[in-house]
Length: 507
Ligand code: SF4
Figure 1 (cartoon, rainbow, N blue to C red):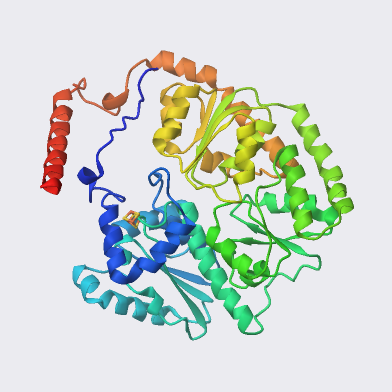
Figure 2 (figure 1 turned 180 degrees about the vertical axis):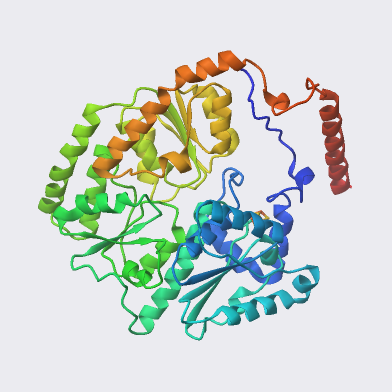
């Protein structure tokens, strides 16, 4: 196959300005800076570095914060942003089974520029602040209110005992929805930490662990914390709370831990809060034999467990994982890409399951908590790409010609068009156990089943041939006619515009 089936036309930023979510990013950034948001944007630039590549393409970042808020009981989540953004975010939340209302404070140009929007937000927060119903109210500034400097930091910290958390989550400041989860989780941890420091706090519903506990950082498959609990039990350690939490008081127990396991490595701001609380942080995850071996050592050491108990934990779990891995193997070449931030641990597991993994791309950045995984993968000959763009992910599929492409929706679409079996990372890989014994078994099954579909792909390709390919796909009443001249004309116009702008800038 010589060309990509998803045409990617590199359009200069100037021409794209204002035409899409991230078009006009610089304009919005400058507006936000001059509207008093410099400090928060500088913080984001440090916490979520973008380089060396441009911002990855993924869903609206604010979805991450919204999801964290909507999954917490006794928490109201309110959006402040353009109606189209709110529509998209609400739709996506319900698609992912939010089962909660999303609050919205609408605005128009007048309320935005006169500052009335902030007054409207303040009023709605006061109306909502019913302590019988809520522990906390979260207000999220989307792109336009952030760029306009709507000052959520001026909202009261608490109304009638209900905590008020205002955060800015603009697409031009927070690169991915994964990191937006961190923005809200960290804001809540910071608030809870200050409460703890100011005096006694209410006990969480779940009784406090008698053993020293490990807080797990990152949303993971529900069986994984149970699997991890079995792994660490011989060290007399217990699994504590998972962050993002499901209720406010769990934030206190999350902070009250022996060690934080940064299973998902991009929670930079949350980790800052745990470090401020004096908690040690351990990266990577107990995946496969080598991953579990290294992780148990790091967790045990950080929790002050004796080497004898660490070895006891290893001796109990590693033979079981080895046994699962020796019974089945993944036979095939794979490329992997995603925007969840857990790509590297999945990649490690794939390699240990026998896969010939060539490429792993993550929309998330390199951090100190995934450096060990990145080095391990590189030592196995896997190309690791942080802040991977869609183009890089597609190039990897084209270059490595895998037997299976695991990726985001456009990568899967591209692979399937190219007659390559493909699996969605978010729905089919990160929604299953990955850790310990259960993780090894479940991944091998799903991957081998997908690779085994090659014959069906070949049959479909032979049956349909070139029908419905590229521009001629869809339902047509007549035979579709290609009109390359229209595209050529559009491209000519765009190039002319770019030249004009450049000439104006220079003149
Ligand atoms: S909030 Fe920003 S990034 Fe999100 S949909 Fe709206 S314009 Fe796009």
